[in-house]
View 1 (tube, rainbow, N blue to C red):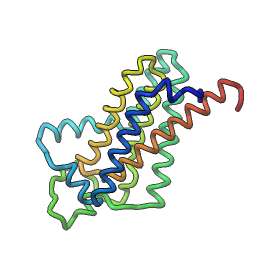
View 2: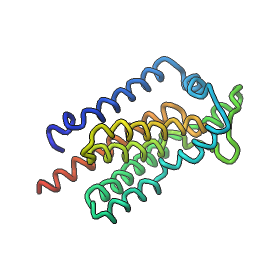
View 3: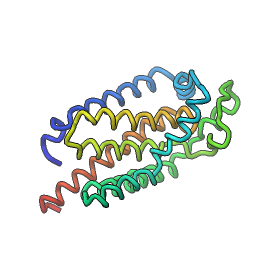
View 4: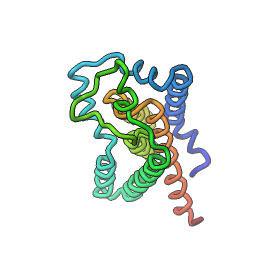
Length: 205
């Protein structure tokens, strides 16, 4: 990793850490259930349909598709890094899900008044923590921001990734803490891959 990577990508780092601070504030102020209901205060059919489709931008296949596009364009470094970051973040997600099984909102809130669960979309079970879609989305957003020469587009990448994370809450797939740690996982995984690739290019690994 270059020493000035933070300075060069200050828009992305500032936006990401601001987003994390906002989420930590909500997590500190509200309970797990309350933060979920606060973030789900408004629903509409068109939003249901939009997020049902858009949430797939956090699917691993989407990240792989983006990587393949870069590979076809002979931008091998970013293509390979996206794939490796997705695999690393996904592996961490699966390990955490195995050791920390937590109920999804539909199970956790089964006896609560919240009932905006979307048929054939909302999942059940105990694989809520952390959010794999959030991890994939932020791993991809981080690498796209680092490689993009137009640093102002970092805000767009962050917005798109944050929208994926929010979609998981809106669709009652995850709680805020799930998407928070999934986002951190994706960011850290991407930075590790970026750093190791830099070391490899420099011949130090």
